[in-house]
Amino acid sequence: MDTELTAIYSLSGRASIPPEQLLKASLLQVIYGIRSERQLVERIDDSMTFRWFLDLSIDQEMWVPTVYSHNRDRLLTTEIARSFLSRIVEQARQRGFVSNEHFSVDGTLLQAWASIKSYEAIASESEDQDDPPVDPPKADPPAKGKDVIRDFRGQKFSNDTHRSKTDPDARLARKSDNTAAKPSYLGNAVMENRSGLVVQGEVRRASGDGGETGAALAMIDREEGDHRITLAADKGYDANDFVEQLADLATTPHVAQNKNAHRSSAVPDEIAATPEYAISIRCRKRIEQVFGWIKLAGCLRQVKIRGKAAVDALFLLALSAYNLVRMNNLMAAKA
Image 1 (cartoon, helix red, strand yellow):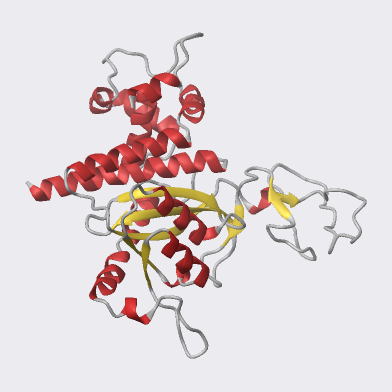
Image 2 (cartoon, rainbow, N blue to C red):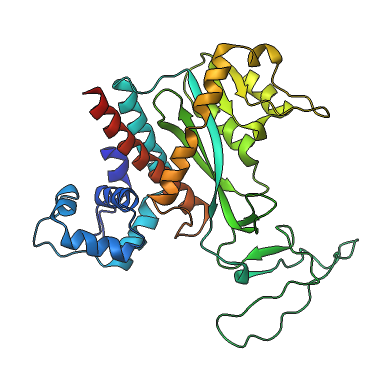
Protein backbone atom coordinates (compact mmCIF):
# COMPACT_ATOMS: atom_id res chain seq x y z
CA MET A 1 0.00 0.00 0.00
CA ASP A 2 3.02 2.32 -0.18
CA THR A 3 1.81 3.92 -3.40
CA GLU A 4 -1.68 4.65 -2.03
CA LEU A 5 -0.38 6.01 1.27
CA THR A 6 2.31 8.11 -0.35
CA ALA A 7 -0.26 9.72 -2.64
CA ILE A 8 -2.23 11.11 0.30
CA TYR A 9 0.81 12.45 2.18
CA SER A 10 1.44 16.11 1.45
CA LEU A 11 4.99 17.12 0.54
CA SER A 12 4.40 20.76 1.51
CA GLY A 13 3.81 22.41 4.85
CA ARG A 14 4.89 21.17 8.26
CA ALA A 15 5.77 17.54 8.82
CA SER A 16 2.68 15.53 9.66
CA ILE A 17 2.07 12.06 11.06
CA PRO A 18 2.91 9.50 8.35
CA PRO A 19 -0.17 7.65 7.05
CA GLU A 20 1.48 4.30 7.82
CA GLN A 21 1.69 5.23 11.49
CA LEU A 22 -1.90 6.50 11.48
CA LEU A 23 -3.09 3.20 10.05
CA LYS A 24 -1.14 1.05 12.48
CA ALA A 25 -2.12 3.21 15.46
CA SER A 26 -5.79 2.85 14.51
CA LEU A 27 -5.35 -0.92 14.45
CA LEU A 28 -3.79 -0.83 17.91
CA GLN A 29 -6.73 1.17 19.22
CA VAL A 30 -9.22 -1.41 17.95
CA ILE A 31 -7.27 -4.54 18.90
CA TYR A 32 -6.56 -3.39 22.45
CA GLY A 33 -9.95 -1.75 22.97
CA ILE A 34 -8.58 1.71 23.76
CA ARG A 35 -11.54 4.03 24.20
CA SER A 36 -10.17 7.38 23.09
CA GLU A 37 -7.37 8.93 21.07
CA ARG A 38 -5.95 10.61 24.16
CA GLN A 39 -5.67 7.25 25.94
CA LEU A 40 -4.11 5.78 22.80
CA VAL A 41 -1.41 8.45 22.65
CA GLU A 42 -0.64 7.99 26.35
CA ARG A 43 -0.44 4.22 25.88
CA ILE A 44 1.94 4.56 22.94
CA ASP A 45 4.10 6.99 24.92
CA ASP A 46 4.48 4.48 27.76
CA SER A 47 4.78 1.24 25.77
CA MET A 48 8.01 0.15 24.14
CA THR A 49 6.11 -2.51 22.18
CA PHE A 50 3.75 0.05 20.69
CA ARG A 51 6.65 2.34 19.78
CA TRP A 52 8.44 -0.54 18.05
CA PHE A 53 5.29 -1.45 16.11
CA LEU A 54 4.86 2.17 14.98
CA ASP A 55 8.58 2.65 14.13
CA LEU A 56 8.97 5.35 16.79
CA SER A 57 12.29 5.86 18.55
CA ILE A 58 12.54 5.73 22.32
CA ASP A 59 13.09 9.46 22.76
CA GLN A 60 10.80 10.63 19.95
CA GLU A 61 8.23 13.16 21.08
CA MET A 62 4.72 11.77 21.11
CA TRP A 63 1.87 13.16 19.04
CA VAL A 64 -0.67 15.66 20.29
CA PRO A 65 -4.03 13.79 20.54
CA THR A 66 -5.97 16.45 18.64
CA VAL A 67 -3.37 16.50 15.85
CA TYR A 68 -3.57 12.71 15.61
CA SER A 69 -7.38 12.78 15.41
CA HIS A 70 -7.36 15.50 12.77
CA ASN A 71 -4.84 13.70 10.56
CA ARG A 72 -6.54 10.33 10.97
CA ASP A 73 -9.92 11.68 9.90
CA ARG A 74 -8.35 13.46 6.94
CA LEU A 75 -6.13 10.66 5.62
CA LEU A 76 -7.74 7.36 6.58
CA THR A 77 -10.67 7.33 4.18
CA THR A 78 -13.07 4.57 3.22
CA GLU A 79 -10.99 3.78 0.12
CA ILE A 80 -7.81 3.29 2.16
CA ALA A 81 -9.60 1.16 4.77
CA ARG A 82 -11.28 -0.99 2.09
CA SER A 83 -7.98 -1.47 0.26
CA PHE A 84 -6.31 -2.48 3.53
CA LEU A 85 -9.03 -5.06 4.22
CA SER A 86 -8.71 -6.50 0.71
CA ARG A 87 -4.92 -6.85 1.11
CA ILE A 88 -5.41 -8.78 4.35
CA VAL A 89 -7.99 -11.04 2.70
CA GLU A 90 -5.59 -11.67 -0.19
CA GLN A 91 -2.85 -12.72 2.25
CA ALA A 92 -5.31 -15.04 3.97
CA ARG A 93 -6.28 -16.51 0.60
CA GLN A 94 -2.62 -17.15 -0.25
CA ARG A 95 -2.24 -19.05 3.02
CA GLY A 96 -5.26 -21.19 2.21
CA PHE A 97 -7.57 -19.71 4.87
CA VAL A 98 -10.15 -18.20 2.50
CA SER A 99 -12.07 -19.92 -0.26
CA ASN A 100 -14.04 -18.23 -3.02
CA GLU A 101 -17.19 -20.34 -2.80
CA HIS A 102 -19.13 -20.17 0.46
CA PHE A 103 -20.05 -16.97 2.31
CA SER A 104 -22.45 -15.57 4.92
CA VAL A 105 -23.86 -12.07 5.30
CA ASP A 106 -25.44 -10.18 8.15
CA GLY A 107 -25.86 -6.70 9.56
CA THR A 108 -25.72 -5.08 12.98
CA LEU A 109 -26.61 -1.70 14.46
CA LEU A 110 -23.81 0.61 15.56
CA GLN A 111 -24.96 3.29 17.96
CA ALA A 112 -24.03 6.74 16.67
CA TRP A 113 -22.14 9.39 18.64
CA ALA A 114 -25.33 11.42 19.13
CA SER A 115 -28.34 11.47 21.42
CA ILE A 116 -32.05 12.11 21.15
CA LYS A 117 -31.45 15.54 22.67
CA SER A 118 -29.65 16.60 19.49
CA TYR A 119 -32.72 16.00 17.29
CA GLU A 120 -34.69 18.86 15.85
CA ALA A 121 -37.44 19.20 13.27
CA ILE A 122 -36.41 19.21 9.61
CA ALA A 123 -37.12 22.54 7.95
CA SER A 124 -39.74 22.42 5.20
CA GLU A 125 -38.36 22.50 1.65
CA SER A 126 -40.57 25.35 0.46
CA GLU A 127 -43.53 27.34 1.56
CA ASP A 128 -45.47 27.05 -1.72
CA GLN A 129 -46.29 23.37 -1.45
CA ASP A 130 -49.84 22.34 -2.28
CA ASP A 131 -50.31 20.17 0.79
CA PRO A 132 -49.73 21.72 4.21
CA PRO A 133 -47.24 19.94 6.50
CA VAL A 134 -48.69 17.19 8.66
CA ASP A 135 -48.48 17.66 12.41
CA PRO A 136 -46.32 20.79 12.48
CA PRO A 137 -43.81 20.57 15.35
CA LYS A 138 -44.39 22.68 18.40
CA ALA A 139 -41.82 25.21 19.39
CA ASP A 140 -39.34 23.95 21.97
CA PRO A 141 -39.28 25.72 25.32
CA PRO A 142 -36.41 28.12 25.83
CA ALA A 143 -33.20 26.40 26.83
CA LYS A 144 -32.28 26.67 30.49
CA GLY A 145 -28.83 25.14 30.20
CA LYS A 146 -26.47 23.14 28.05
CA ASP A 147 -28.05 19.76 28.76
CA VAL A 148 -31.71 20.36 27.91
CA ILE A 149 -34.27 17.56 27.82
CA ARG A 150 -36.21 17.68 24.54
CA ASP A 151 -39.94 17.01 24.71
CA PHE A 152 -41.38 15.56 21.49
CA ARG A 153 -44.78 14.64 22.88
CA GLY A 154 -47.58 15.73 20.57
CA GLN A 155 -45.28 15.70 17.55
CA LYS A 156 -44.74 13.21 14.77
CA PHE A 157 -41.22 12.05 15.57
CA SER A 158 -39.47 9.91 12.94
CA ASN A 159 -36.54 9.86 10.52
CA ASP A 160 -38.71 11.74 8.03
CA THR A 161 -39.51 14.63 10.35
CA HIS A 162 -36.47 15.05 12.61
CA ARG A 163 -32.71 14.94 12.22
CA SER A 164 -29.76 15.06 14.61
CA LYS A 165 -27.74 18.27 14.65
CA THR A 166 -24.75 16.40 16.06
CA ASP A 167 -24.64 13.69 13.38
CA PRO A 168 -27.01 14.35 10.46
CA ASP A 169 -26.16 10.96 8.88
CA ALA A 170 -27.42 9.00 11.90
CA ARG A 171 -30.90 7.49 11.72
CA LEU A 172 -33.24 6.27 14.43
CA ALA A 173 -33.37 2.48 14.62
CA ARG A 174 -34.03 -0.21 17.19
CA LYS A 175 -33.05 -3.83 17.48
CA SER A 176 -36.51 -5.12 18.43
CA ASP A 177 -39.98 -3.91 19.37
CA ASN A 178 -39.05 -4.04 23.07
CA THR A 179 -36.08 -1.67 22.82
CA ALA A 180 -35.85 2.08 22.39
CA ALA A 181 -34.93 3.65 19.06
CA LYS A 182 -31.48 5.26 19.09
CA PRO A 183 -29.41 7.16 16.52
CA SER A 184 -27.56 4.39 14.71
CA TYR A 185 -25.70 3.17 11.65
CA LEU A 186 -26.07 -0.20 9.94
CA GLY A 187 -22.83 -2.18 9.73
CA ASN A 188 -22.79 -5.04 7.22
CA ALA A 189 -20.23 -7.79 6.66
CA VAL A 190 -19.66 -10.80 4.40
CA MET A 191 -17.84 -13.71 6.06
CA GLU A 192 -16.13 -16.71 4.49
CA ASN A 193 -17.73 -19.79 6.03
CA ARG A 194 -14.74 -22.09 6.40
CA SER A 195 -12.36 -19.80 8.28
CA GLY A 196 -14.69 -17.16 9.71
CA LEU A 197 -12.69 -14.33 8.11
CA VAL A 198 -14.48 -11.23 6.82
CA VAL A 199 -14.02 -10.51 3.12
CA GLN A 200 -16.30 -7.49 2.65
CA GLY A 201 -17.77 -4.76 4.84
CA GLU A 202 -19.95 -1.71 4.43
CA VAL A 203 -21.75 0.85 6.59
CA ARG A 204 -25.08 2.34 5.59
CA ARG A 205 -27.60 4.61 7.22
CA ALA A 206 -29.88 2.65 9.50
CA SER A 207 -32.96 3.70 7.52
CA GLY A 208 -33.70 4.70 3.92
CA ASP A 209 -30.36 3.55 2.50
CA GLY A 210 -31.14 0.16 1.00
CA GLY A 211 -30.99 -1.76 4.26
CA GLU A 212 -29.27 -5.08 4.82
CA THR A 213 -30.33 -6.59 1.51
CA GLY A 214 -29.05 -3.63 -0.50
CA ALA A 215 -25.70 -3.75 1.29
CA ALA A 216 -25.47 -7.53 0.77
CA LEU A 217 -26.02 -7.20 -2.98
CA ALA A 218 -23.43 -4.41 -3.23
CA MET A 219 -20.81 -6.42 -1.33
CA ILE A 220 -21.41 -9.60 -3.35
CA ASP A 221 -21.17 -7.57 -6.56
CA ARG A 222 -17.71 -6.37 -5.47
CA GLU A 223 -16.43 -9.95 -5.16
CA GLU A 224 -14.15 -10.87 -8.04
CA GLY A 225 -14.85 -13.74 -10.45
CA ASP A 226 -17.88 -15.00 -12.30
CA HIS A 227 -18.05 -18.46 -10.70
CA ARG A 228 -21.10 -19.56 -8.69
CA ILE A 229 -21.01 -19.01 -4.94
CA THR A 230 -23.35 -19.62 -2.02
CA LEU A 231 -24.57 -16.95 0.39
CA ALA A 232 -26.07 -17.79 3.77
CA ALA A 233 -28.23 -15.31 5.68
CA ASP A 234 -30.93 -15.17 8.34
CA LYS A 235 -34.69 -14.97 7.84
CA GLY A 236 -34.62 -11.22 7.40
CA TYR A 237 -33.11 -11.71 3.94
CA ASP A 238 -35.88 -14.07 2.76
CA ALA A 239 -37.44 -11.74 0.17
CA ASN A 240 -38.34 -12.39 -3.45
CA ASP A 241 -36.47 -9.38 -4.84
CA PHE A 242 -33.30 -10.26 -2.94
CA VAL A 243 -33.30 -13.92 -4.00
CA GLU A 244 -33.98 -13.00 -7.63
CA GLN A 245 -31.12 -10.50 -7.70
CA LEU A 246 -28.79 -13.09 -6.17
CA ALA A 247 -29.57 -15.33 -9.13
CA ASP A 248 -28.39 -12.55 -11.46
CA LEU A 249 -25.10 -12.46 -9.51
CA ALA A 250 -24.54 -16.24 -9.91
CA THR A 251 -25.20 -16.73 -6.20
CA THR A 252 -27.12 -19.63 -4.67
CA PRO A 253 -29.33 -18.33 -1.82
CA HIS A 254 -28.71 -20.31 1.35
CA VAL A 255 -31.08 -18.03 3.23
CA ALA A 256 -32.99 -19.31 6.24
CA GLN A 257 -36.58 -19.90 5.16
CA ASN A 258 -39.12 -17.62 6.77
CA LYS A 259 -42.39 -19.38 6.13
CA ASN A 260 -45.51 -20.29 8.03
CA ALA A 261 -49.16 -20.97 7.35
CA HIS A 262 -49.64 -17.44 5.99
CA ARG A 263 -46.32 -16.89 4.23
CA SER A 264 -44.21 -18.77 1.70
CA SER A 265 -40.43 -18.61 1.39
CA ALA A 266 -38.56 -17.14 -1.56
CA VAL A 267 -35.92 -19.88 -1.20
CA PRO A 268 -36.89 -22.97 -3.24
CA ASP A 269 -37.45 -26.15 -1.25
CA GLU A 270 -35.05 -27.94 -3.61
CA ILE A 271 -32.20 -25.76 -2.36
CA ALA A 272 -33.27 -26.01 1.28
CA ALA A 273 -33.18 -29.83 1.06
CA THR A 274 -29.52 -30.02 0.04
CA PRO A 275 -26.78 -30.89 2.58
CA GLU A 276 -24.82 -27.79 1.49
CA TYR A 277 -27.73 -25.62 2.61
CA ALA A 278 -27.73 -27.22 6.06
CA ILE A 279 -23.99 -26.62 6.44
CA SER A 280 -24.32 -22.98 5.38
CA ILE A 281 -27.14 -22.36 7.87
CA ARG A 282 -25.01 -23.83 10.65
CA CYS A 283 -21.90 -21.83 9.70
CA ARG A 284 -23.86 -18.61 9.25
CA LYS A 285 -24.15 -18.05 12.99
CA ARG A 286 -20.40 -17.53 13.27
CA ILE A 287 -20.75 -14.06 11.81
CA GLU A 288 -22.25 -12.98 15.12
CA GLN A 289 -18.84 -13.63 16.66
CA VAL A 290 -17.41 -10.97 14.36
CA PHE A 291 -19.92 -8.36 15.47
CA GLY A 292 -19.49 -9.36 19.11
CA TRP A 293 -15.72 -8.92 18.89
CA ILE A 294 -15.74 -5.52 17.22
CA LYS A 295 -18.37 -4.22 19.65
CA LEU A 296 -16.87 -5.56 22.88
CA ALA A 297 -13.13 -5.95 22.26
CA GLY A 298 -12.98 -3.21 19.65
CA CYS A 299 -15.26 -0.80 21.56
CA LEU A 300 -17.49 -0.14 18.54
CA ARG A 301 -20.81 -0.68 20.28
CA GLN A 302 -21.06 3.10 20.10
CA VAL A 303 -18.75 4.78 17.59
CA LYS A 304 -16.77 7.79 18.78
CA ILE A 305 -16.79 9.61 15.45
CA ARG A 306 -19.47 11.24 13.33
CA GLY A 307 -20.44 11.03 9.68
CA LYS A 308 -21.20 8.01 7.48
CA ALA A 309 -17.86 8.11 5.66
CA ALA A 310 -15.85 8.21 8.89
CA VAL A 311 -17.91 5.43 10.48
CA ASP A 312 -17.52 3.31 7.34
CA ALA A 313 -13.72 3.67 7.43
CA LEU A 314 -13.61 2.84 11.16
CA PHE A 315 -15.85 -0.20 10.67
CA LEU A 316 -13.62 -1.53 7.87
CA LEU A 317 -10.53 -1.03 10.05
CA ALA A 318 -12.23 -2.95 12.86
CA LEU A 319 -12.99 -5.81 10.47
CA SER A 320 -9.34 -5.77 9.37
CA ALA A 321 -8.22 -5.94 13.00
CA TYR A 322 -10.54 -8.88 13.59
CA ASN A 323 -9.08 -10.68 10.57
CA LEU A 324 -5.53 -10.16 11.84
CA VAL A 325 -6.40 -11.59 15.25
CA ARG A 326 -8.29 -14.47 13.65
CA MET A 327 -5.45 -15.25 11.22
CA ASN A 328 -2.98 -15.34 14.10
CA ASN A 329 -5.13 -17.97 15.81
CA LEU A 330 -5.48 -19.96 12.59
CA MET A 331 -1.74 -19.97 11.97
CA ALA A 332 -1.08 -21.06 15.55
CA ALA A 333 -3.56 -23.91 15.19
CA LYS A 334 -2.06 -24.93 11.85
CA ALA A 335 1.45 -25.01 13.30
